[in-house]
Length: 392
Image 1 (spheres, rainbow, N blue to C red):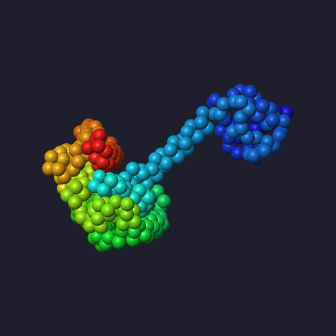
Image 2: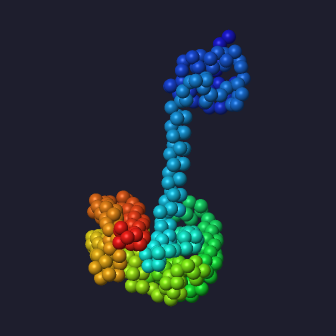
Image 3: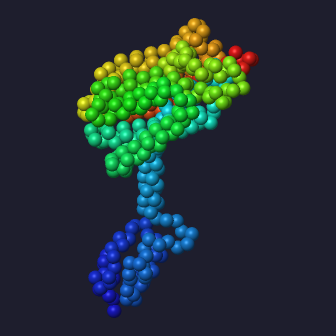
C-alpha cells in the first residue's frame, strides 16, 4: 500500500523537523531517506536522522562552509577592533620621553641608571593606559564616540568597568612614579610629571573637557614636550652612590640644571607627539561637529590642516639643524634624525593621497605614530653616539 505521505514535501504522520532538502543533496542520500519513510521508520532530530551529518571524508555543504567563513571573519574583525581600541603603538608617547631624557643624561654624563629607566618606562605606560581608557569613558558620556566601533566602551558595553580599569592603571602608575622618584629626591621632576598628568585629565575629563574647545594639541605639547621629557631627564640623573667613582659626574648630577639641550629635545618630542593627536582628527570632522567638539580640523578644514601638517613635519628637522649649528645639540643627533626622514615623508604622502577620502584618513594617525617612534629612537641613538670618539 502506498503511504499517503510519499511524494509530499512534509509527511504529517512523521514527527519530522523541516529539513528543507536542497537541490544539491545527493540522490543517493535522498533515496535512503525515502526508503526509511516508506518503511515507516520514525525519524527524530537528533538520533535517527541528522541531515547535517556527512559521511567520513566527504566535503561539508556549501552553506556550512559559508557560515563558518562568516563566523571566522567576524572574529577577525573583532580582534582588529580590539587592537585598534587598545592602540599598542600609542604607548610610545609614554616611553619616548623617558628614553630621550635618559639619552640626554648619557650624552652629558656618560652614564644613566638603566634599571630606573626601565621602571619609568613601565610607569609611563601605565599612565598612558589610564589616559587611553579614561578618554574612551569620558567620550562615551558625551556621545562623541557613539559611532566609533573601536571604542573600548562600545566593545565592552560597560563604561563603569572601563573607568574602573583606567583608575587602576593610574594608581599603579602613580605608585611606581612615586617610588622611583624617591631615589633622586628632586621635587622638580615630581612637580613636572604631576603637571603632565593634570594636563592629561583636563584634556577630556569633566568638567574641563578642554579638547572640546580645541585645546588638546597645546596640552599635548606641554605635557609630553615641556613637562615629561625634562622631568625624566632630572629623574634619571645618577645618584651620588652610583656616581661615587667619578667626582666630576657626581658634582654635575648634584646640580642637574635643565640645560638648553634638554629644552630643545623637549620641544622636538612635543611636536612629534602632538602631530599624532592632530592627525587623529582628520576622519572625525563630522562626528566632532555633531558633538560640539571644536577640534583643530573642525576649525581649519582639511585644506588648511594639510598645510599645518606639512609645517609640523618640517619644523623638527629645522630645529635640529639650528640646534646643532648653535652648539646646543651634538652633531650626531642630526645624523641620527636623517634616518627618520623617510617616515616623515610617508606621513605626508599618505595625507596627500587620501585627503579626499575620509574613511582612509583614519589610518593617517598610524603613519604619524610610526614617525614619532622612529624620530624618537633616532634621536636617542644620535645622542648616545656622541659619547663615542669615532662618532663625535
